[in-house]
Length: 151
Image (cartoon, rainbow, N blue to C red; front, side):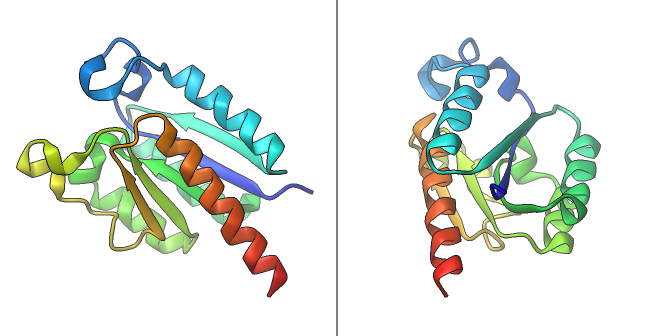
């Protein structure tokens, strides 16, 4: 059975491709998810993707991961990065390792974007690589799982 990897996309990421392409790029969320599914197949991982503009939906999904066999999480909390104690607490509670991803380089943007409620809990943080950041995160996860299996 393939290890299950959950990919969570926060608010407004459903607008990728049309929303501020100079900052977020021209790649759509559907294209990112398709790339992750293909790469997941290559890496022998089951990739499950969810986007929501609603904090509670993401919290519910994180809580469900504690029971559904999810091994790792890749999350772009988007605007919730700077506001969601609830989502942070859910990730902390389920104690699943995760990678935090941001399309833009948050350190080249407004000061408030530099504050993350997630980074201190994350195994890794990828910022400023555009859509490629998700693939980098999935490769990181695959490497971590392989190292874990060899231990």
